[in-house]
Image 1: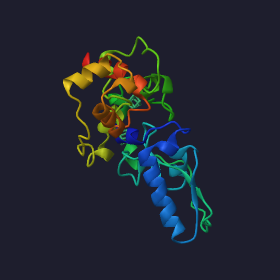
Image 2: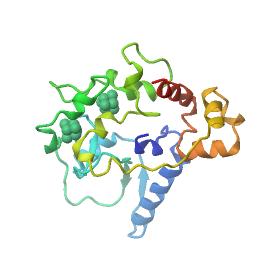
Image 3: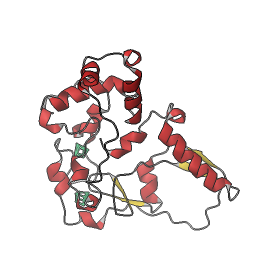
Image 4: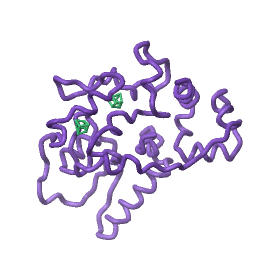
Length: 220
Ligand code: SF4
Ligand code: SF4
C-alpha cells in the first residue's frame, strides 16, 4: 500500500481517524504554545502545498515535498497566525521531470500524458480501486499492484529513490483470516484480532473494497 493510505478517510469521518487525530493534536499543540489556533479544513491539499512553496508537482500530478519524496499525507489547516510574507507561487513542476518520462512509461493505464500536464484520471487505477464497482475491460490483472491505490509512477521515480525501499510490515494476516476476508465475511463477524489488524492498516472504513482488491491482486 502507498503509505498515504494509512491516513485515508472520508472527510466526514476524519475526526475518528487515528492518524489524522494524532497530526491535528500536534499542530494544535504547537500553535497553542505560541497562542494561535489551527482547525483542519478540507481544501485541495496538493494545490495548496505547491502554491505555498512546500512542494512541487511531478509529471504524474503527485506532489513531492521539498523535491525529495512523494510519500506524504498532506493535511490542510487554517490558523489565526498572521501571514506576514506572501510566499504564494505559481504551480511548479520538479526540475527532475524535465528530461524524464519514467512514470509515463511505467503507468499501467497510460494515464500520464505526453502532451499535457493533467493526467487522464479515467485511466488511473486509483479511480477504480478506491471505489466500489467493477474494473473496466482494458484494466487487466497486471495493472494491479497494490491493495488500494497504485505505486507504479511513484516507485519508478528517481526522486523517490532514497525512500522507496523503506517499507514497513505493519500487520500480517494468516491464511484463515485471509480466507475470511476473501469470502466477504462481515466486519462485525471477524475475530477481534483480525479487526485490529484491519484497523492498523486503516482498512476498516474501506473494508467493502478489500475482498475485491485482494482477489484481483492474488489472481495475477
Ligand atoms: S518519474 Fe521522472 S517525470 Fe515522473 S515524476 Fe518522477 S522525476 Fe518526474
Ligand atoms: S497512480 Fe498508477 S495509474 Fe495512476 S498515474 Fe500513477 S502509475 Fe498511472
